[in-house]
Length: 231
Image (cartoon, rainbow, N blue to C red; front, side, top):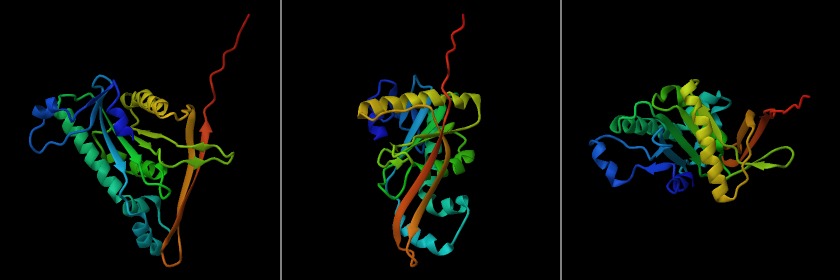
C-alpha cells in the first residue's frame, strides 16, 4: 500500500526511473525513493510471505523463551529484509553522493490476522543497532487493526529512531507521510499517542498446530498544550 502511494506523491522521487541508472555501478543496490528534496533515502519492505503456521509448529516445542531468541527464529526473514534495506540505502547514498541524507526503511505488514505491526516493531528494535545506514524504521499495518479496551479500533504506526538529533527530524516527515496516506485512503488519523506497552501471543494446540493470534496494546496519551489567558 505505502509503496504504491509514495509513487504518486509530489515529495517522493522514484529511483526506478531510468535517469538514475548511470549512477549505480554493477553490484550496487538501489533504494526505492528519495523524499523531501533528497533529504531522505527511503526503502519500502512489505512482509507478506512469512509462513506463520510452520514457524509456530517449529517453535511450540521449545517452550518459553526470551523475545530476542523468539525473534531470531520467527522473524529471520524480516531481519534479512531489514539488512537488505540497510545495504540498499547505503549504496544509494554513495551512488548519488548524499552522505548526509537520512536513511528510512518503511516496513509494512500485509499478513492478515496472524501478525501485526507489533511484530515488525519488535524485529526493528532488535536489529536497529546493526543498521548503520538507517536513521529510522517506520512500522505499519493497514491490513489489521487492534482493539482497545474501550472498543476503539486502531492501526498503530510505530517509528523507531536512532537517539540522535538528526534522526529526530524524521518524526515530522514520517507524520506527513502517514497523514497524507490516511487522507488519501479515507482513514482517520490521530496524533498524540505514544506506545506504553504491548503483548502478542500465537496460540497453538498441544501438538504445535497453529490456532490463532492475539495482541493487546496500551497507549499513553501525551498531554495537550494548554493556553492560559492572563489579564
